[in-house]
Length: 379
Image 1 (cartoon, rainbow, N blue to C red):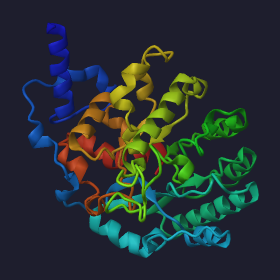
Image 2 (image 1 turned 90 degrees about the vertical axis):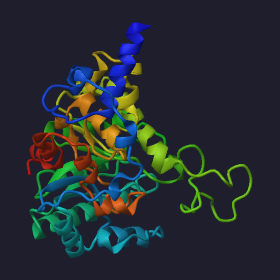
Image 3 (image 1 turned 180 degrees about the horizontal axis):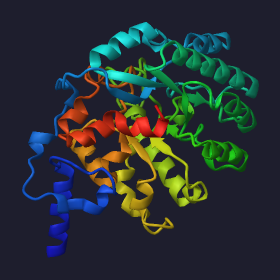
């Protein structure tokens, strides 16, 4: 019983956190040894952390989790009878830059969001959409080389075509990573033999991969994604789901991300590709909290694999961000905001606020805001 009480006390200290300085080796190795004393959760678990103004700062940060939809992409989908209705911020670069200057963001890494069409396009349609999107990203970077870079978009439903497009644009100006979905309409495409040449080529190129779940009915979590976000009820809905809010963006994406990470570990993929650099949205989802349950499924200790990943900072709660830093180290966390698509508009108005409130040591804060991505993406 005493051992269990000591373990629980240590866990509470880790979750509550304090002034952190955990770059370098895995934070999990330090654990509760770094801290002592009681923690008040009431003082740290702010229900709306983005309501707290961030520290005034000149543009310094790099945001890995920023979605856009360039005009050529929107036209290509509209021509196929599947139009999007997205905020003009998605392709108005001048407007973005003004916002970035006000909010201290130096560079956005532009990627398509969950609305990517890879689940329903033909190979020819997918090749066209990925090509026009990548070309638009290169143009954005050339026009504003210090403000925008991008993830390479690949139609992962067509591995042969994806490999052709990867080879076409890899090494071109501003293409600093690859943007891939965690799964494709419920299919584990990442681990299929047809996709292996794409993954191997990404590995050999040394390009990090930003992983983000897809939208669409085939990817919805826990039933239908209900349309009326304000009430949680789909218009004219009846039956047992009529008053059941959709959970895809909240719980579903976190679990989807954790599942993808777990499969990368237990499948041996990270062992076969030792230099693969996965960057996970949703701050790694649920895995940093439940990873210990994989210990009898992985070839090496799970915490060693957790250090193979990088994580965006989108935890939504300050104690969760502190805990993540304790688990993996601040040198594995990067700024991510889900810009223009977050559930709380305040998040976009104070993009550094969550990190500021975590009270990281200044060197660790700098790593999270910009240093880690400068190194990873060679910016």
